[in-house]
Length: 111
Image 1 (cartoon, one colour):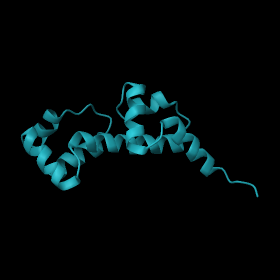
Image 2 (cartoon, rainbow, N blue to C red; image 1 turned 90 degrees about the horizontal axis):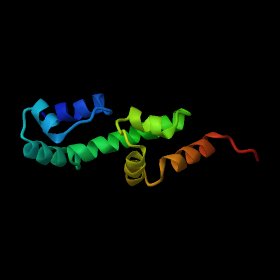
Image 3 (cartoon, rainbow, N blue to C red; image 1 turned 60 degrees about the horizontal axis):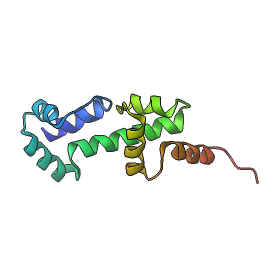
Image 4 (cartoon, rainbow, N blue to C red; image 1 turned 120 degrees about the horizontal axis):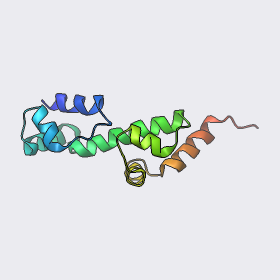
């Protein structure tokens, strides 16, 4: 069941998962799911989902010119300010700073 839970999160990163809904999907209580998930992956299911969203957002920031608010919605965060806080917690920099760093590394330097 724990791999099914992880798979569901990976397949539907942008979905607004609740712990209750995810636990019903894998037929465990929310408490059981959380305990087993933390044992297996070192994070709660919702923290894991946040990590996945931040990773997906980072990829989109690196590879597209899509506005940050739109990228945030695409990965499942409807509030761009909340998305920026979550991204910064996960990655260590704001989405705009991340994009600027990624662009500066992608541009060949002359010298």
